[in-house]
Length: 556
Ligand code: ATP
Ligand code: MG
Image: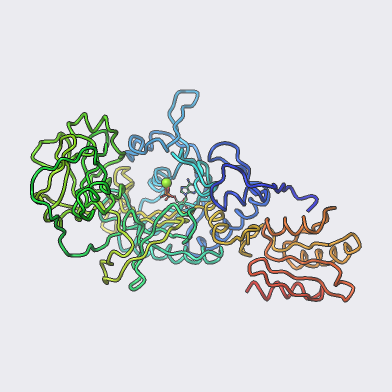
């Protein structure tokens, strides 16, 4: 311990919002270099290497092969896939000294597809699954939560190449099984949930979520306790109650001075929010779109984006709303011809008589639904009915630690990455991609395993397995002996040989999160040491020679 490069802090860093960020920084695992960019200090690096080793073992066992692609990529490849234009600001673009445009790899579909294109010419060479473990860079809008959402982070990304959909389906299941094993071995319980696959219709993807009850989960998961349906809220569908909603107001215009919000309108009219039409104006790829939904529901922006086949979407400002001739707070439906596209959520279908803005300041109007096609752009909510079995859905928050994705020919077709099939016909590869956030997984383990005193590392990814703490100098020889024995037995051990009070040593041991602590104190007079298990607080006194077995008994 006296030689270990670790400086624990007395306080949590002031900019840390979530437990994993607070604890990893305070316990001396990470140090911030710049927003969303962290140094992985020796303790952290040991954890990350262990997560990587588990990922490698399982990926290799599943038949994938490791390679390493460059971190800096040329623009030309991104032009081939069409993503240079659409990737947005997360793509860190730069120029080299010859003025050639490059980017820092946020992901490697383009590069891997180019590699395959050069190497896989025949159906006989497939299936193939290639992966790497590497740093990625994404200029995230909101880098936060420490390693959970960094700008630079470590990812395992794998890409599979198959001759047909059937092959892809098999590899997808193979990867799903490997992922389940990987996270289990890392000491993490995960839920595999359906996820948003972007605007490409028909594609399939799943996320592996560590379920958390803290606020650190950036993702919301809806799941059915009855039939097992589970999906990210960006994708989750639900059944609304079939009853129609009807306002009791006479169909005419009403003076509603300065009453704009759904809640204020409901209070003003003494009506439930589900008879009020909610209108939200967005700027979608630079054009205005008015989205309508029932007053008690929320719009899910990813669903909206997909329904419109859009790249970028944001709320319109009041000025932008006025520019298209609408009055913020009093937006209505026809008859006025609005210079914006309209999109209507399915929930509006059941609104028989409803209250909407009158398209003029300080007026609302009660009226009947207008006939218009609707689609699903709404956020599914807790207690909505499951579309598969009708049971009430539940909601929880989660951390996405990995995902698997059926890409199909999304990259191979535009990049002309083809092989010759049995009949000598050229066909694009059918691809899948599979990511795991290595650094995010380590941080998620802290979210899942900690208490007020510090981290409780799962044994498999702990930086060290055990710490031996001599309470005073006289006990050092026994402590030293235990330390050497454990080390020799392959149990990675730290000897706390610092000249510190026992209280300080215990605090640091809890904070750093060694799975086992062996304390050599007064009881050594009776030939006994104290053996403490960090995960469950179990504490026993045993003979020094029993320590190794005590550890082994608790890790299988
Ligand atoms: P998210 O929705 O969280 O932004 P993503 O859909 O962009 O993730 P992918 O591009 O598929 O994720 O990346 C694969 C994995 O990499 C994710 O499952 C996640 O574990 C990890 N990851 C993605 N972005 C970050 C980040 N900014 N910081 C740390 N890990 C990340
Ligand atoms: Mg992302």
